[in-house]
Image (cartoon, rainbow, N blue to C red; front, side, top):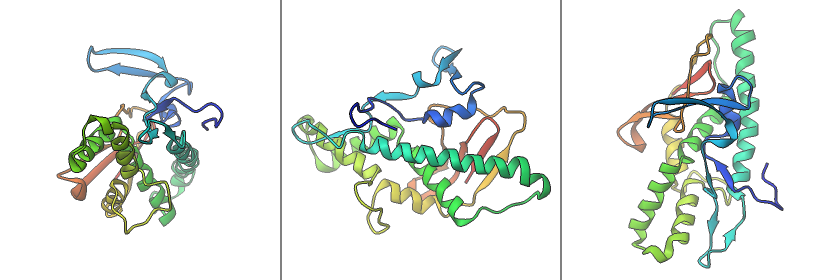
Length: 224
């Protein structure tokens, strides 16, 4: 959890608690670099982050609500641990007795929301949202801080209770993903891997996503 007195600067766009599911010691992970085709064992804390990625400022470049979005993400990561442990219990205990189970509405809702947020928190998505905001408002470079704030809140409308009547990228994604069915894949040999852009989507547009693949750990993958 971010410290109020000392705000978190290194902000991970792929959560560390998530990456631990692909690590043998929960501290280090094998990183394969596509640019030079090399593999290296690195600390989980040293990858998939950018400084102040989710911070927003006012027009005087003053930070507003330091770590506000980061704190909300931390709450989701705590829930991630709870829900994936429940899923593992089903797989390794209950599934032995019953080869078929159905998620309840609460579990469905959590995984759909978690996947939507994971898709939006990637730097390239935030950059695209910022670019679209610049074009829409026709603002120059002098409004960089305001545009970043608008694009962040458009992706993560967390300043008040979520409303299905308000358009945001998060709501648009949720409306699409909730129409898909959830399937869990299991690889008992732990061969599943992930990346710095962990959610794979197949579809022509935001409103027409047909398939989502999201590895949850080295042996569990979720399909929508």
